[in-house]
Length: 416
Image (cartoon, rainbow, N blue to C red):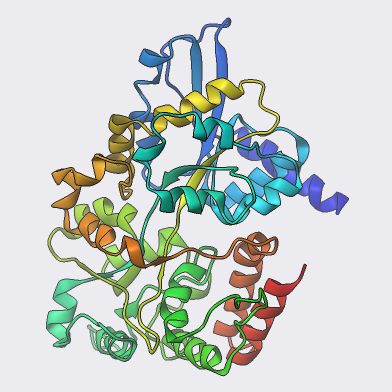
């Protein structure tokens, strides 16, 4: 444990030395109160632009924004929490709350929320997500995205197939879009951008749990290891085993799956609104979005809500709360959603034609009521960050069977 903690603390120091830091004030005044904010972003500079008006409203408080790379964010956050060196405000996923609570690193926010006159501009579903099943509220809504299927329009036309509405149609499309376009005997276009690295559990869940599976039953026991889930998981693994996904899929993360889709290596991609601007800049009108396909139990739409948290050890709690309120104001929320490619949830931004008339954003907003939030439990952080990618990669490489994979995932999910 000590060696692991030293390694994590070393990671904190090394990453901090290379963090891009953005200041919302032109000149740092030594007498100003300073709050630090950690976050990850896919579109560089989107947060700095969205929060550029901070100094106008709070001239006596210096806002320091620190963009942390996604690949190291969770480990860096937990290491900083363990060492007591967290920033004042930091971005989280709700499934991380139990870990942060166990370290005494996250502040309760109920009193601040209840006394805020803008509370009703945020829907109750987002507050419930932020509470994450805890007896108190430790997070403040930040953003929401809904996964959908990006389809390369010309590829579907050339293959003579429709956009998939069911899982059977999806797997047929994976096969139909996979081609050797130059006749050299090697596949150069694949049906699907499969993600075996961290974060891949989102698309995996969307294409397997729609067969009727789940993580926990009503009694709190793990129900993941069922014959139906083993079967659905095998079909998902077959995308790679049948050669319908790039050979690099076991280690492909966000950057790789998007690049494969944009460069023409793949014909389908599962992601969310955050990728829309980048993809359309590259592909123009040669891209459409459709809902994730339905399985035997209907549609399973994993959502990725993110929230703000305040360090329990912050010396600037009141200013940190002011930042949360500022980030939730109409114009600030609109700017971040526009710059970072996020789904608006604060009224009246949700009714703005700039979002409702955008096909990518509209596709997200249409299914907000159908989204599924992953369970919040003490095991989830390690399960999603480490256990799932390692186990998935072993199964893709043929080291373990689908049944063994599901059993490993179930056992680690249940372990307390």
